[in-house]
Image (tube, rainbow, N blue to C red; front, side, top):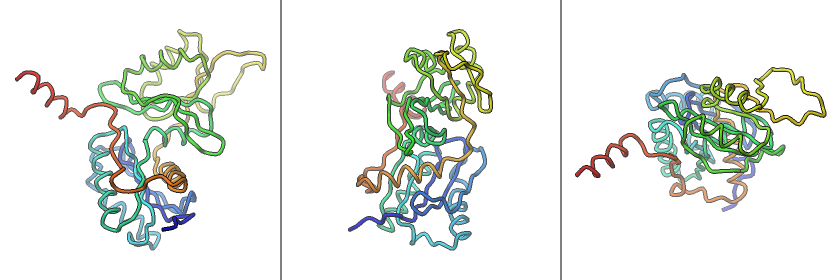
Length: 260
């Protein structure tokens, strides 16, 4: 079956601090609904999906592609979002694409040769990954997604010796730590809106904190559409959660097993 070139896409992010759902035609956003900063992602998820569809006069049966954040991020949110969209896709026999959350975070930071996307991982730690965002809007991996302390992430990134952007809720939550590390390492720190006072001849490394973003559903739709158009397998079976680390329940289970 030929794939539509500008599919009607319903996209969802339940992995980050701000739940969001969007309706798009190809890469053009039609509507966006951003929820509150709560962890009870499943409580109003179906209501919000129904709300955005009714607002645009679209039925769920008309959706041609489902796109969902597949992690890393909130375990509870990820499971709720993935289960919901995989069920939709299976029931309606529609394609579904899982998009790595950190890719969406990087895309929202606008084009840059090096973007360190970071999300809160709990206990003062972060999920982080170094990525490139091209002028054409493609996201390329420069390293694997990791779960680590923010200071350790800063050390690893500093070792590359390149200027870059920091993006995502994890970067903002740990901004003071990153700022102090940068200053101690002789790296210039800038935040959105700061004026670049460097002279052209200066080659000093600069870390820039990208503006905060409260929804990633639009970026998820754009990335999913590109993967879909490139011929990526969009079956329900290929959509899996990218946890990066074990859940608390799994950690407890392993500890219990090792003590037996």
